[in-house]
Length: 162
Image 1 (cartoon, rainbow, N blue to C red):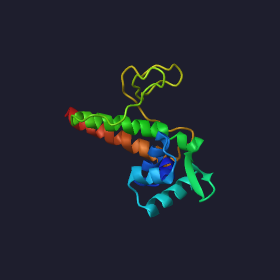
Image 2 (image 1 turned 120 degrees about the vertical axis):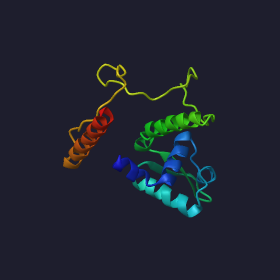
Image 3 (image 1 turned 45 degrees about the horizontal axis):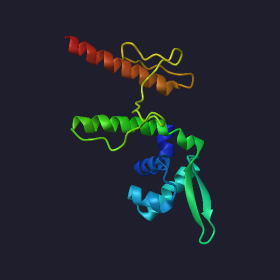
């Protein structure tokens, strides 16, 4: 999570990536859509380029103008942004508001949603409950986070039982 958040930088970086993934590529369109100042937008685009999320390409010689395109690494963020859209839709629904964006199948135009599936079988978890465990790259700090979180959940569960 920290690596992805570090690559995005801040909310402006996330908004720029949102717009790039929606298909906007030109500086003025990005500025208009995000509402960022010129200084903020220029800085975020440079940061996103340094992070490998964005590629800058010249599309006009006189005057020189560039467009910004998500790289493969940048396109990986579409999963994160789709999850954020899905969460935002849930929150809006709870407030009796309509969703501003739907994610749909390009051919059928039917709405899609993200869902957890078993990596081996492709099935959804039967109980809906998930657990977390350290992966091969999990360091001592990750082990501590997981153990601490488990202890806190057990303590809350015990309190509720009493």
